[in-house]
Image (cartoon, rainbow, N blue to C red; front, top):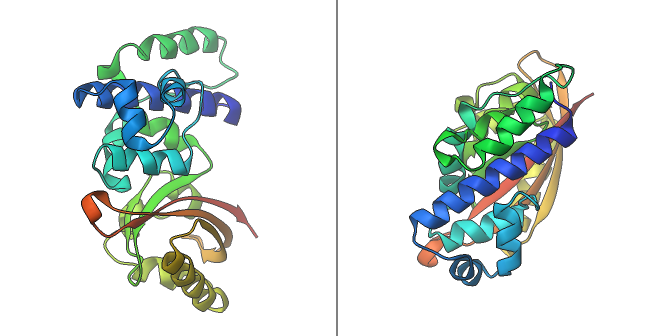
Length: 228
């Protein structure tokens, strides 16, 4: 498996290339997108060139700029990720493969970003706002963390809640409610029962967003875990 530094670099490169493709499809200049997303044009340029890594805040801002919910924006990136291939860092051809990845940045039709996200030790997700907190998107690597396919989490919050340790469940829901009421960024920590029955210590980083055109907002987050 590639080192995290290599994966992060590839993620930035692929995210930037797909962002540029989406911007051009919408007929926007970097200046236009910067204005709509309330970010600097130079930062948009650095994102597209893979110099900067997208944060939760920048993903939220970009989704609003494109008139999309955050999970819709992530879904646009996902098909690009699924078919990407990654190279073992011990393989002597790694340098050639890295050059091939660089060349792919100019061939948007062949950018496959989801596969890169899939290998990272972090899952991206979106949830509806209070009171349901229903998951609407999970990146596919949630299976590597929990043992469950992402489809298990989608459609209802029941599966997610049932797997949270009983001692943590009420606190998690109360903290989510408190954060959503204030529309604030925040963090959740709880124990989660994996498919094997082991307990995983979960840490979620959350950001609450407002929807496009005045629609109700949603929650965008990242999830990491460590076995207890």
